[in-house]
Amino acid sequence: MAGVLRAMTPADVPAVLAVQEPGAVLGLAEVFPQDEHPFPREAIAERGLREIELDGTECFVVLHHEAVAGFAATRDDEFLHFGVAPEHWGDGLARAAHDAVLDSMRASGVERARLRVFTGNVRGRCFYEKLGWTPTGERSRSSFPPRPELLTYELSLSSAGG
Image 1 (cartoon, rainbow, N blue to C red):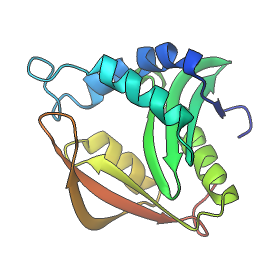
Image 2 (cartoon, rainbow, N blue to C red; image 1 turned 90 degrees about the vertical axis):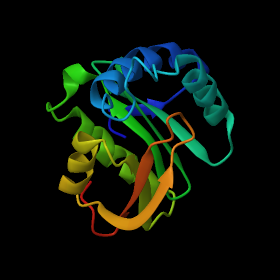
Image 3 (cartoon, rainbow, N blue to C red; image 1 turned 180 degrees about the horizontal axis):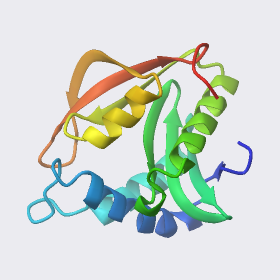
């Protein structure tokens, strides 16, 4: 984890939300128009607290100079949640955190990872595709209104960098 990640605690949830909300509002504006579907802060906080306590789910904070600058979560072979603060977009922090999460998954014995990303999240899809993730063709829907489509991606961890 090399200083980029550490385990998330319940006390981290407010700082994670402070990073996650502006990134979601900016990066997912086409997916969740804020005038109709504002960031569900309370629901995301509750989900984060549940996932921290859930067996088999690993929740992390992404650190930049010891401050919370992002978040990640995994469950078994699934890369559940991931994001960094908009001010770190393009500076390499997301790549370093992504690779650290994959290292954690590898250490847990995961050989093939999967994730879901919103079809309308062009920036996110480009990020993952640049790092070798490939779409499986599987589609699903988010539980959050307006229930946008999610695409499933996968990555062999035996061939992924880290």
